[in-house]
Length: 193
Image 1 (tube, rainbow, N blue to C red):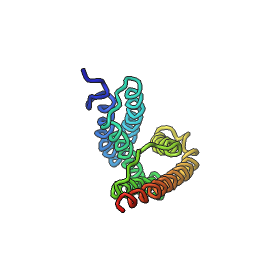
Image 2: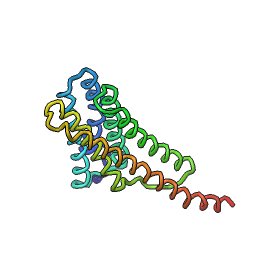
Image 3: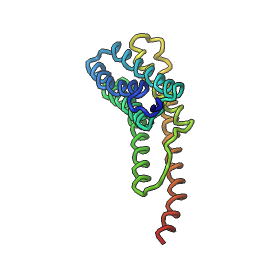
Image 4: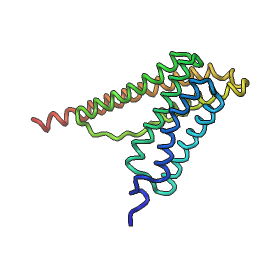
């Protein structure tokens, strides 16, 4: 009898897939200026992100698919959100550029490591987790500001906090990538010799 963790389609992975599927719906609501439904979709997507991790850990339902799909779903939602908010001129465009540039930097680093056949494990660092929380909070509060203007005074400080954390996280991943390359490439060269 297979363990729950051996099943590819389980509740955590279904929640992750749902998050991917509702992202275009969120973008459509934003483009149409329907901010309340967009806020609801974003909120539900955020809840599903927490729940999929909780179910995966609590019920031993972690899968390789889930480990790869979850960060993709997160990035898809966050990038779509920041791009849409910037295009609609709801947030400063430079904030969206910072958020997207970090992700491009990370994906480029992963591609370089794979190109050199360097074995590595993708584990989010503490600063990376803080960055994700700040980005989610920024997007959520920006959307909430349409319903509750009381949150507007915290937006500008939150933009700067998100920028600082995102930049620090990106630089941290650059440092880790360079460290891994410096450690692993000489080993590969020695094997070929």
